[in-house]
Length: 103
Image (cartoon, helix red, strand yellow):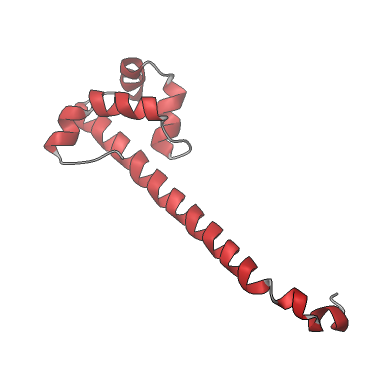
């Protein structure tokens, strides 16, 4: 329980707006990451399906493990910058045809 003396102390209350802003920033960042990861996961899966490939075929063409592709498509992890370059190269025809960006 917070004592009355502490609650009445101005030094405590002057940090509340700063803490609130930090928490808001963290929540916004988390929401952005969830939305971005889900969109990226859906785009990878969509392009792979349009190409008619299995996850294993995509993994083999990129030189990564099957589990890696599965985690990407589930939105659990994000491809590294090098993997993104490879994905853009392998899925280039689908991305251009459907005017998609993998960002």
